[in-house]
Length: 63
Ligand code: SF4
Image (cartoon, rainbow, N blue to C red; front, side, top):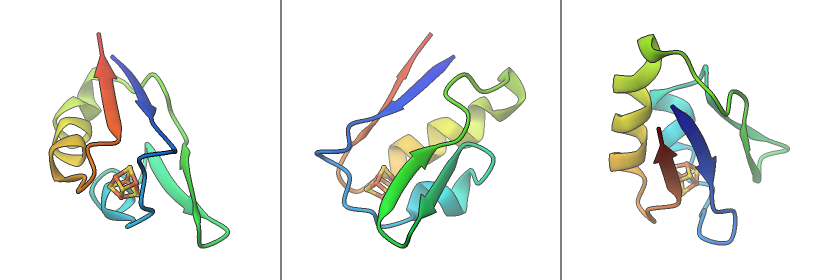
């Protein structure tokens, strides 16, 4: 799977970083960073959950 974040849509809530800290992080208190843009399948459920919980729909998952 591949993960990306539309930074124009991201509101930096940090929700995704709480749910899947292996993949997402907030740096400098205001910048969302995708740490692992191609996470292992073992992280799939967490990444999907993070995308569903993102309040702005900024997280895109592709296969
Ligand atoms: S949950 Fe969505 S809005 Fe919040 S930091 Fe992650 S990508 Fe940005």
